[in-house]
Structures are given as C-alpha cells and as structure tokens.
Amino acid sequence: MQPGNYHAEGDPQGTVRYWDGTEWLGGPFVGQDSALENPHEAISNAASGYATWGSRFAARFVDGLVALVLVIAALVLGLLLGVFNETLGLVVGGLLFLVAIVATIYLTVWLQGTTGQSPGKRVMGIETLKESGGYIGGGSSFGRWLLDVLNQLPLYLGYLWPLWDDKSQTFTDKIFGAVVKETNRPKSLLPLIPKR
Image 1 (tube, one colour):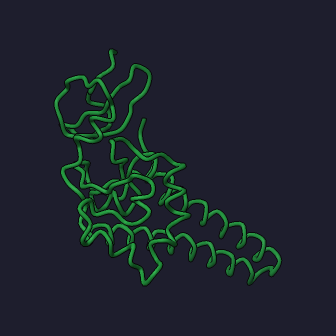
Image 2 (cartoon, rainbow, N blue to C red):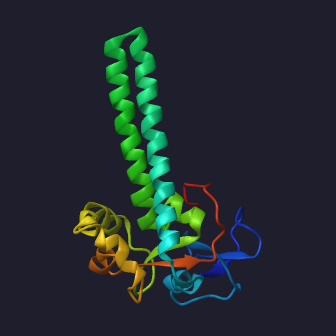
C-alpha cells in the first residue's frame, strides 16, 4: 500500500491514519482518504484549537486518579500479603509499588509524548503536540514531567498561566515548545496502549 491516509482495521468508522509504507503513524483522525506529504500534518490538522484551562485541569485530575488507584492497589496487596508473612508482604508490596510508579510514568508521561494523550487527556479529548506539529516524543514529555516543579513556583503560577496566555501554555510547555490542543479523536479511557 502506498503512503497516505487510510482507514485502519479496528479504528472507528469514518477515521483514517497515516500509513508510511511500513507502519501506521498517528491517528485515528476524522478526514478524507487523501495522501498527505507529511504525517505530522494530519496530526496538526486534527486539532481544532487550544485546550481550555478547565479541560487541562480535568485531564490532570483523571491522571492523578489513575496513579492513585495503581499505588493504592499495590499497597493493599502488599499489606494483605504481610498478614500472612511480614517479609513477603514488604518485598512484594515494595515491588508492586515500583511497578505502579513505572506504570504511572508510562501512562501519564510516555504515552503523552508518543501518542499525544495520557489517559486523562484521552478522556477530555485533548492532546499534547509540538508547536510545529507532531508529537513531542517520550524524551521531551519526560523532561516536561521532571521540570513540572517550575509550574508550581511561585504559588502554582505556571499552572494558572494558560488562563491568559495566547496559546494556553504553562511554563514547561513554553520551554519544550509544546501546546495542548483539542482533538477530534474519540474520547475514551481505553485503549491505553496505542495501535500501530
């Protein structure tokens, strides 16, 4: 199949993805089956405008709930095992806690960089993109996550900055050249693992 936009098996009806000749990139997006010269153009065209502060806040809240559920599940399982064997409970509970932290970073940081959406952003119908178009990538997403402390100082001003910024950017968005935009992708919590 020649590179271009085509409907991918398993995607919602009326959507297309970009086929580069070897694998599916981006999407699914609502659009026509016409080929694009640049797959990132499809990603940029999918977004209709900058995300509101409220939708960004709600997405972050959902991501926090996902992390909380994972961590609490790990701790509860560790405590339950600890009832039978204290050492086993500590070891398994600690390992499960580490797995929960890694899973949280994958879901809220890595996926956001490689697919544009964390679980919260998927639910809210928004995505993180480079200002020039395309996804920011896992490394930049991880950097944004590490430098998130800049949004908290002073008095959480970086989190409030999108309320009056032309591009609705936080401080870390500006540092990494990222924007959060509305998308026409279907809203849902699942699937969390991107299709290729």
